[in-house]
Image (tube, rainbow, N blue to C red; front, side, top):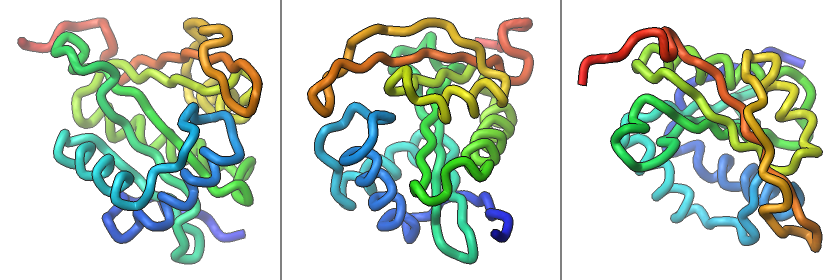
Length: 176
């Protein structure tokens, strides 16, 4: 297998990103969405992130998009402006090949360069060992679990909360 290229996502990637996310919605528990958003909705979400100045990356193998990751606002209130929440999704055939880790590492570096201080991971399903593992390997710490907060595929699911300091973290206070 060739090495993936991790690059900024572009609008032309969105049909592939939409298909990757559709599979995750229909077959997985990483997301608690029940109906996959269409290309128009995924384009709206992408544009909102771009307009907000957030990073969004695509992973390609042999020129084909096989995964993506982005950071967005953790919460809308201004006091949270230095904290982002990450999302990472991969084609199922590319799981366990290090692509998720490479996407997350690139996302962390970019968020640090943009002055963010904390990154939150809200991981769907406490049985999602792959996502929990990749976040742990990238320096995230478990900060808690919300038990039984989502109902999907006829069963209750947890969300696992993980957090990682970015750059100087909370050691200094940026100018207001």
